[in-house]
Length: 62
Image (cartoon, rainbow, N blue to C red; front, side, top):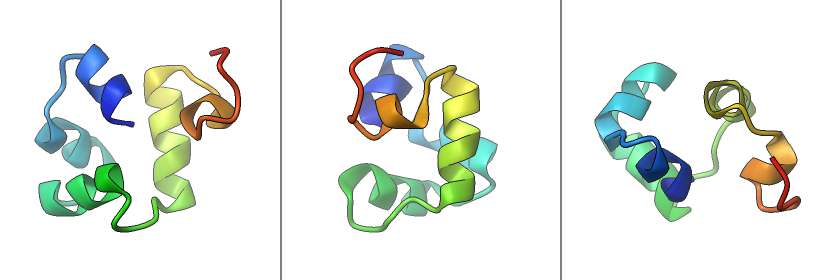
């Protein structure tokens, strides 16, 4: 999650804004302190143009 964000040269705040959440909550998602809601997962997959399997580390192919 962090790697995709950093590869896109985005801040946590920018991604949080995309998701409609706070930077603090997004940081908790990145650290694994909170589970990422499915609607956020879907939005991030579409934004980064990757599959959910790739995003979750289940498939190394985008």
